[in-house]
Length: 376
Ligand SMILES: [Zn+2]
Ligand SMILES: [Zn+2]
Image (spheres, rainbow, N blue to C red):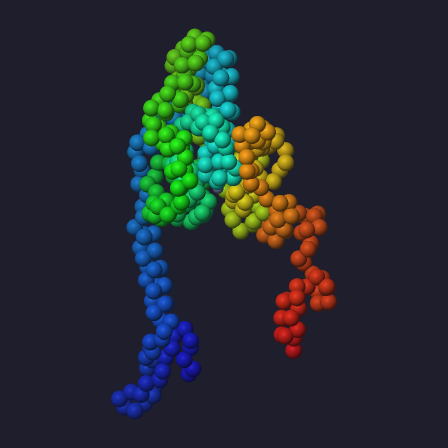
């Protein structure tokens, strides 16, 4: 019997001189590697076994409060207890402060997809803080980890753990040890050097009280004499929870339901409703393939990508500059090669790589050499 490479054996004589059925393993160099891999797998498996996320009760109670408060506020709106101006104020706040997330925390601070002069950075930080989604440094930190280790244990809102976890569960469950480990190695030096980012981080609690609760609630109370509790439930909880869930949809829905025109092997998808709600952040398959593109999508229309319109407007003023993007040629080739075919069914580019058979002049030189070498 020939020793097989994966499990080398030699026949060994028995004491009675027979030569049957005794197999003795011969140590081989690659055994060390195999042992190492086995050990690592065992450690990984034991980590898997050991890791049971726990509920972080303060975060859980905060989410519960916000979502119950959302229902109370919506009830006040539909029963006409809230004044029309209060509803309009809430819609305007959701709309405008959302740009602080998309153009600020996301495209500027997480991805460095463009640069902004300090007046624009201050404006974006003001708008972002109103949303109440933690400080920009922490937001961008987790978002960089999400992109770098997407769909693994190290992804803070790993969509492979299901819709609920990717949507909101990750906010109130203890993070996987891999998330904690990878957070430590992501480079954040650029944000640490940004005084506006670090100032907001340092004073986040008073800023939260002032801009997430105080400002949205007191404006209707003082300017059109809204009842303070109506202002609280509508302008704080309904507004906060709406913006929060739109952002959550990018992590859940836009990682599950839609097409994958640019890379069919990753989970992020293109999702129009999310793009509309999230001011242009629903083109998530594109965004994960080209995260440095300030447009976070290929579509040229501002209608489905309001944030791009916002950045372009400030570029005209000179406050936004060095906007990074991807050439149409690279996008086309990427989509043709790795996409799910939903983008280029009729495009010439989709048909560049295929050949009709041996003899097609489009066969790559190295493929042709290999075919000729192997023919028999
Ligand atoms: Zn991103
Ligand atoms: Zn994502």
